[in-house]
Image (tube, rainbow, N blue to C red; front, top):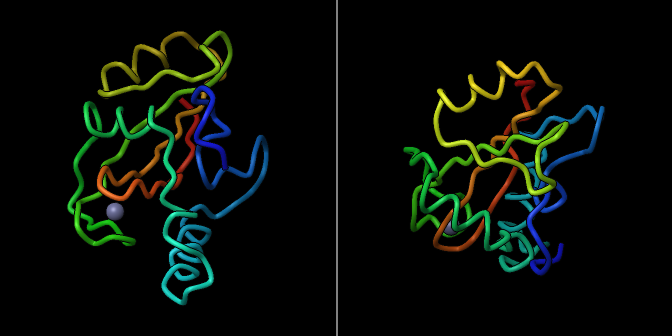
Length: 131
Ligand SMILES: [Zn+2]
């Protein structure tokens, strides 16, 4: 996964693509496990796009969950909305109100909820929901 280039839906780890049925939590657990047993290096999974880390630190929602990789920081959640007539890098949404406003547009939009650690740059898709 490349860290260069602009942020896009492709920069979000864990997305199976349009219509793909995937259990994001299972994929996440397996990835964390791969790091724990040494099959993956930390830097292979701690490669969040700079834009994602910036969003996480500025508008991300702090959670009670410790980062599963570095265990030094709590995870933050960032919601990006992608879809028709939105920029290719999506719209970073920081409040429920903003989400409702997008929803009111009646377009086919999807919200990607991503967890990120601002310390080690671990990131993973948690869920994709229609807006
Ligand atoms: Zn971390």
